[in-house]
Image 1 (tube, rainbow, N blue to C red):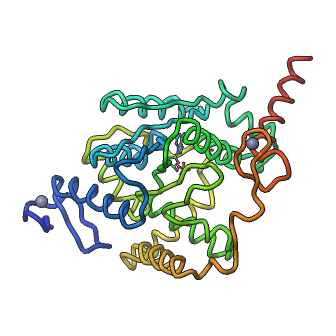
Image 2 (cartoon, protein in one colour):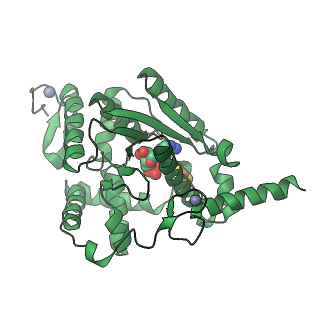
Image 3 (cartoon, rainbow, N blue to C red):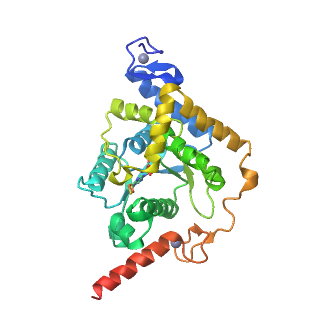
Length: 315
Ligand code: AMP
Ligand code: FES
Ligand code: ZN
Ligand code: ZN
């Protein structure tokens, strides 16, 4: 297989795009495409300050790398979840996020959940009794809260995450199976700012996971290979496997599924039936929008964790 641009031996063959490229041209192609998507979906401009949520994985580190290469003002945010699971998962992901920031002379904000809120995610999850013994629900709630808070408090215009096409197609698949209109309406490359929250964007949403792995490897980025240990057996991994089987037989199916959804969404198909921001008001403690009458779910969680701690210290 030869590179379409220079005729040298190709390093990456993308059947879904009928395109093969050598290392050099692949490393040019990825940022060019990213720039195209950023502009097409009006994610942000060169004048805006971007906060990139960096997990230490290939997607978010590649995203940070691409934005910096494109000349955007992009700082990082790492959230220390306190997940060890016998492999020092959080410690290692923190080390890799730090390493990237240091090597590229970039600013990385770090929020350590245990230091800030008293307990690491797995303990918070146990105390809360949410998520049937798995910490993913509490983890997701906490990450969303912290990302919103940091972007708002530090004055960033936009928060960028490393969700790729495989992530987005799996979520879309789940939401379509249950026809969750409210979630379908909110699932786009851009979630506009509202109620004092920064705009949220997913600049990698049209890249296959495989394409991001190839980018990280060819760029020589050091990233954590392990998925979160708690993700094993999750529904989203199952949906990804199903979609990969489909993609294998019909290259491009995953991208078409996602893009046709975006077109339908753009044409207003879901808007008439739902108003996702209806009935929201600021949480009385943290000010983030919530549909609850006083405290948001995150502040209620933290109240519960603090209550448990004072019980223990009074024993
Ligand atoms: P996940 O929810 O683990 O699939 O991650 C989706 C995106 O959320 C990643 O690409 C990152 O942008 C962001 N993210 C996940 N974990 C963290 C973390 N510990 N710190 C900062 N950002 C994170
Ligand atoms: Fe949060 Fe796995 S439980 S990353
Ligand atoms: Zn080439
Ligand atoms: Zn709150």
